Length: 145
Image (cartoon, rainbow, N blue to C red; front, side, top):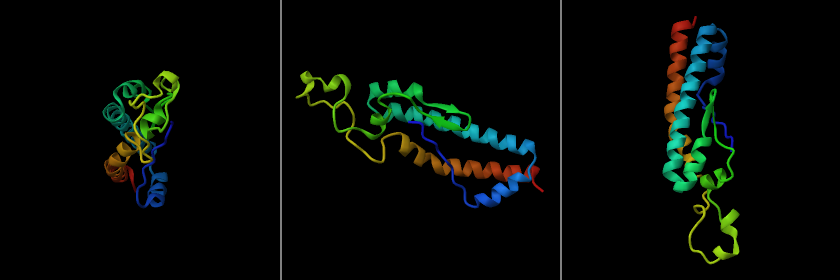
């Protein structure tokens, strides 16, 4: 699951037009801020998967969550989607006949809104929006016309 996380800021077209007029140093500052936000989000997601997924699943999925530039990427891992959204059936070794009457669950019950990835991003969005706005304001103050 390689999911992109886009931050929406009100007045984006106006901001983008203003950024075109800024010099290379301002652009580097914005890239640096976006990378910082991605690094923080990746750390939050690694903590969230350990807290919200079943413990063994979290340990398997956690190392696949990383920052790549200004993006956060998770995976590939076979249980990534099931750890986030749950599952109805049994899969892999747990689908064997000998586990047919087992009452244990391999994954959490299905949850369309997710258990750790989506909720963490939704909780992080207001802070990320504010950080981007602060960085844009600083760039415009320092390098703007």
